[in-house]
Length: 247
Length: 338
Image (spheres, rainbow over the protein chains, first blue to last red):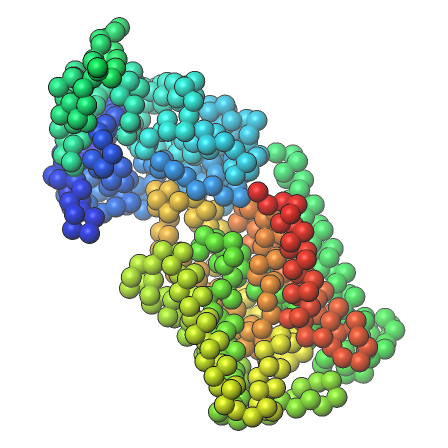
């Protein structure tokens, strides 16, 4: 198992946000966490990423890790990234931080170049990140996470700032990487249609609990009404679910 | 890639050239008129003593203090996530001024005379010692607060501003109730002056700078990681809280030592790192050494300017740095800041 979550609970200032969650993620699996605002999606990602310390167990490849050891296996891309006076290259090089000693080595630079090409960022490589558009920054942050060469990739709303084309390109690429290198991807997602297009499995959160879990079959009219409180039509098309707002 | 590395290389060469030429200029120029050959003789033989005992220590002090203030500023701006952060924003200089004022007014430690153009301090160690204590008070208050209450970087800056006002008020209160000679002494102390240090003190500053610089360089990738969100830094295996605490402590300590021996020199901690950020790079692997070198050169140039521009009186370097620094800085902002 790539990730094992057992009895995970978390409270902000004694207000419970996550209540006794348990689930597994297999190697190479793409899992989307969906649910309304405030249902605990981001908090769950942060707990897995070791940024928040929850009660219960989070095992990464069977181990209870933290710090550098965790960073070698798990990469996390937050929803919003502060941008600095660093170049795209420098930011992506940061992904090598857990692997490098006192200074980045030859291999680290090679990985960075490889990721830059993979993410089609060659032209931006020596631009400062504060000059880029929101979508470009997001791509850089994902590239940084990939440079970490993680076994697990956690993404918080990865398509947030992207236009339709970039959304699809990024999701395709992430899915491809997951399948080719056996990386597990856990991502939060607002857009249920995108989730249905690229997910192996969907986790529906409601009020800090797993309301439903499974393949695309969990995206039903009834579940969506129960979790989001809206009426939708779910159309099955080519084995995918298309969610349309109801009348 | 090529353009970027060329820019780095150019900046390195330029800074080394500026450092060397400002050093030579400062060595050969002064109110005590000597030919370059006499200066070199004086360096080797020790006569006339003005070079070894006045000019050289002054130059070395300016270099070390400039370097220390600049690198502290660079680090503070990173860990506090604020372009305005410098050790002074945290009330360090105000704390030092308070400590010095206390020693001068109540301990009778340093009644400063004006003999000719130089100042003599009656008790040379009491004033720096109390200045040092004063400057550390605000640092420890801020560190304790952030340790106990887990303050955000923004809150730390605000706490620093509050401490600065508190110290300023306390200093003014003391000055209000004392005689004018002592008030003048306090005011004189606060003007940054590179000519007060002995070789022993210079050695202390050198030790502190070397140690802190070593630590800052060791942490350079952590600083790069901290320019992203704290969460991202954690996910890269960095402990933001720890890096922040240690760096804050060292940068403040370094500044406190400089300020207590030389008085208050503003602006270097802002101008030097931001100039490098705007003109060269924001990558802390290069930013730390480059701003250190630039700060050293800047303070030396300002001090040389201050002591040579008027033949009769040396203008305190703190005034010069602000006069040269502020317009330059505004120009850089207009040109390069987005």
